[in-house]
Image 1 (cartoon, rainbow, N blue to C red):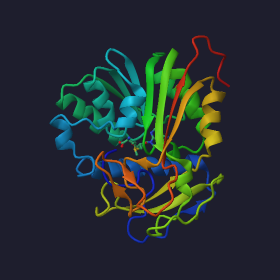
Image 2: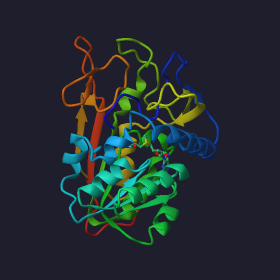
Image 3: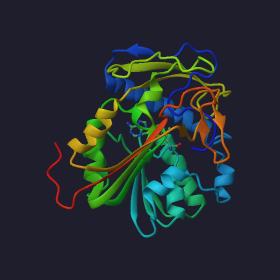
Image 4: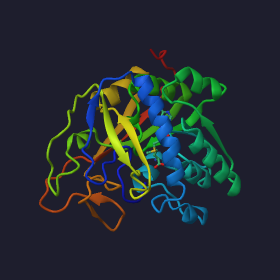
Amino acid sequence: MDADGRPGLTTPDGTPGGTSCAADPADLVRANRDLWDGWTELHVRSDFYDVESFKAGRNTLDAVESEGVGDVQGKSLLHLQCHFGLDTLSWARRGARVTGVDFSENAVAHARRLARELALEARFICADVTDTATVLEVLGGEQFDVVFTSHGVITWLPDLRPWARTVAGALKPGGTFFLSDSHPFTWMFDEAAEPELRFRYEYFAREAMRWEEKGSYAAPDADFEGVSYSWQHAFEDIVGSLAGAGLQIVSLKEYPYLFWRWFPWMVKDGDGAYRLPEGVPEIPLMFSLTATKPATTRPAH
Ligand SMILES: C[S@@+](CC[C@H](N)C(=O)[O-])C[C@H]1O[C@@H](n2cnc3c(N)ncnc32)[C@H](O)[C@@H]1O
């Protein structure tokens, strides 16, 4: 993402912030899917995603993603939670054989349409990334050199363990998984305080958070109202779920910036990264993680 906004968590104009919610996660995931079907319709027309410049050749991958994944020429790449495909198709433009997965039918339909219009080779699949058996079945047993997912992804998932098993199951032995996302620490702060970091939310929260949505992070002024649900994941759960699925962590990095506006009062630098203003202590805002699947792996559990 290279524009203003806060993926997956939006309280744009004085909405009260998140509240804890004890409902069945399966119901909340269904509600999120409906929300994403609606949001996609806003996003394909938004300045934030700027589809026209993408069609003209703009690449949507940022420096952390590009360096973290490296050269993909001739490689097979699976993009989890691909939204309507801009990053997936950016990898295709760099020579990867790409497959995108998202649970929003509308997002997948738009991604397919865009790929066709741009004559880019790509496959898009509609599935829930935490439904490991279904994803692996729909992939028909194919395994990939690279599994990629980034920016506004893990907080949509109630439980990272099945997601990690999907990653491990879809990787070739010796293949590489790359993840970058907002740092779990950033989720603790009050989004309304300005410009100051004020603790508000639990780091170890287990229940979902419920958010009133007006518009979306990418289209804050759109005439749209909905509700989203997100889940906080401690670092031990992120790393632990991947290790538990049999992957080996080879790199973990933390950044004092991210590529989208998390707090409204952040400052954009010349490289398109958003930082905290001078005088506010630096905190980790984003992380990236690379893991590999050992050539001979013990079975995921
Ligand atoms: C913030 S977007 C992805 C970020 C992407 N980098 C972008 O900017 O377009 C999050 C995506 O996750 C998808 N998603 C959320 N929960 C999912 C799930 N359980 N399975 C598959 N996709 C999911 C949503 O439909 C949405 O397209």
